[in-house]
Image 1 (cartoon, rainbow, N blue to C red):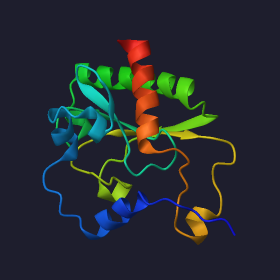
Image 2 (cartoon, helix red, strand yellow; image 1 turned 45 degrees about the horizontal axis):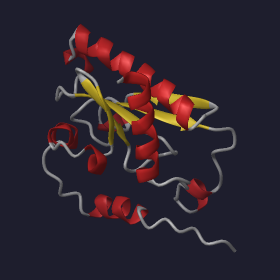
Image 3 (spheres, rainbow, N blue to C red; image 1 turned 120 degrees about the horizontal axis):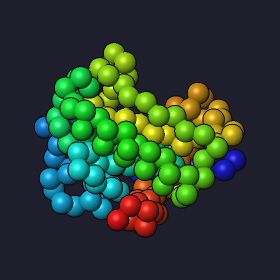
Image 4 (cartoon, rainbow, N blue to C red; image 1 turned 90 degrees about the vertical axis):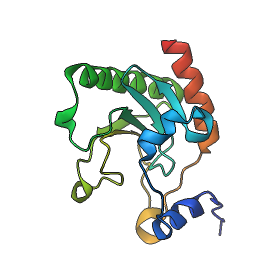
Length: 165
């Protein structure tokens, strides 16, 4: 039997138990000016791109407007356009770096719809590969992600810089 070693998953497990974070990480992280620690790979005029700390797959990104709102209808046309253009930039960067066969792109509006952070709208971009699902999530409640967040951060930051700066 092979051993699965994923010690970083304990942070996620503990966050479900010790969810005492106050404030909004999507408001706090961009203001901290520590993009490496906060996994922010790109910033535009009205939004930023951040790696999901608890990814469904390698390269799982979120595109987040700076404006704090739970209602997508509160975003201006300029913010919405920048959001969409940044999603497109993210797709391009992911295609160049992780070479997915496909991607899921979506927004969960509200806790009932599946939003983990429901007070601040954001899009998820999840790279997908043929055969990337297996028995682990069903039997063991565990998702295997084969690259560290830091390695993904370094590759994606470099690609965003190369393409868009």
